[in-house]
Amino acid sequence: MNEELKDYLSAIQPPDKKATDTARLRWAHVAKPLNSLGVLEDDIVKIAGIRRNSLVTLKKRGLLILCADNGIVEEGVTQTGMEVTAVVAENMTRGNSSVCIMAKRAGVDVFPVDMGVARDLVSGSTYPLINRKIAYGTKNFSKTNAMTRNEAVQAIITGIELMGELSEKGYDLAATGEMGIGNTTTSSAVAALLLKQDPTRLTGRGAGLNDAGLIKKRKVIQEAVARYSPNCQDEIDILSAVGGFDLAGMTGIFLGGAIYRIPVLLDGFISAVAALLAERIYPGCRDFMIASHVSAEPAGHILLEELELSPLIQAGMCLGEGTGAIAAVPLLQMAADVYGTMSSFEDIEIEAYKPMEDPS
Image (tube, rainbow, N blue to C red; front, side, top):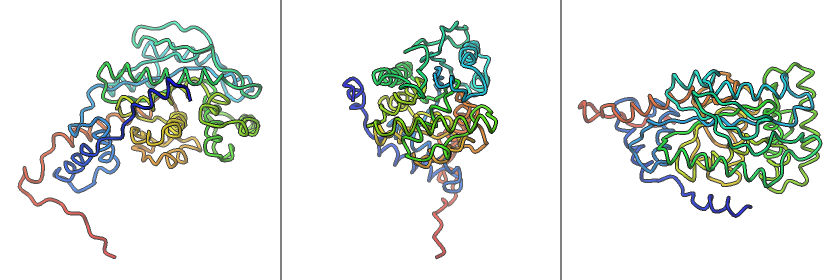
């Protein structure tokens, strides 16, 4: 592994047990039925441990949207052309995309990042573009490796650095998003290599492929998995063989969450693949992640189960951009409000709820 990346990872420490124990005790005293907010309670406890502070605050929230093109689009595995990536990315800088509209409502700052779009972008002023372009898109992995190993490492470190910048600015919560035509193809290929499963089980229609398009997409991925699998010795090999700059950057974001102790919200399928890459690179990294929703893509449930993460939302979403992650932010904020401000049983002078005994 690259020495610079090793140095970053050496800074990771596990969540703070004292803070998590204190947070669980606080929930037990809040004047409501025990565990009645379900996964929301668990995630607030997790955030306390990540932040080393049982006083949970989510005042500053940021969304990093990593934008990049994928050479595999040449194989006809998408409904639209590569040029759409740049158009949507530029719209994001003007606040004119689905996730930007949702982020405004949720009180989340948006940071569009050019990780490898196939042309230079013109930034709007609403959410100024962050230029971290590694190359003008990846190569077509049906012909050659998508990127070099050095490029994959560079993209991972870029994601870590982006989280360092959020940390310096005092952000309490980060959300992940992406934009890149063809990235459900790259993500399915990466997932198949990570999970050692049949790509047909993990590959969906992406942004609306018809039956013929889906068959072609699956065939391209199957051939790539067969080709690269024997030579992939680690996660960075997998990324460089069939991944994308957005996936590699998001992998760095998840690692950066553990390094800088900022909870990171997964979005959907693509984000979950990056999260699994991060977990495989540094086992235990998942303790710094929060699952927002279950993607409608076939591998959505599979990846969350592999990560042992419970989602907050099940709404059949598969838009990408970070929309699922942003949709979860108000839920987390409401839970934090209950956790932080609601009266205790002692305050209102009633007997606390006790855990139910198993009738058996």
